[in-house]
Length: 302
Image (cartoon, rainbow, N blue to C red):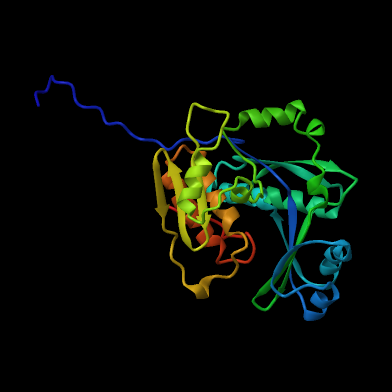
């Protein structure tokens, strides 16, 4: 090349720089209370060793009793809060990329929940009220078994007009680029999807009416240890999950929330959907090696 000819420019591809409050999550916040208990405690409250139930009237006193009788660990929980917590862990810095809204009580458990969200570097803004206590989920551990009892309580008391509509809170909603709200629903049954073919269900879900006509819906279905199914355009793809030895699995309860968190951590950085799924598989693979939706200090994700 002659010396007076222009040299080709080298383009350096930079990672997207994230700012605080780019990811917004809203849902039912619960304080997870984990403890190794004895059989007498399970029997007293009519609990099975391995179960997941919603608290009834007879369970209301157990949350304070478990704290008094056993050594407990506290974690910020609830499906959406778990997911934004995992997303923030995957992102690491800056802190408070993830914002979370929900309702808690003005009580000791609410105070602890605020501390735990802060430790996870999530920017949590709770609507605090006095009518119901902070929602809790007791994880009663006996040997390899975990009996989960959730008391939603304050989590069901969110008041849009008293929190979401406030100017300072709405500004946080407007700052976000990605929004996540978890909904538990018998989706396929409600829509009359009779087939058991997961790919066919994904395609039908993709074709449901939607407000934003500018882009087609992306549908992602996880299936535990089976492959994750994604519809994008006219394609339906299946992505195998990461392999793990059965002996290394401690608890699969938070796997779904963790997948969503990993997925969101890349979506908020404008990564491809394939990369989002890869991150979701990674975070779920990490979380199932730990009790509850907990994780090591830093991810090892590439």
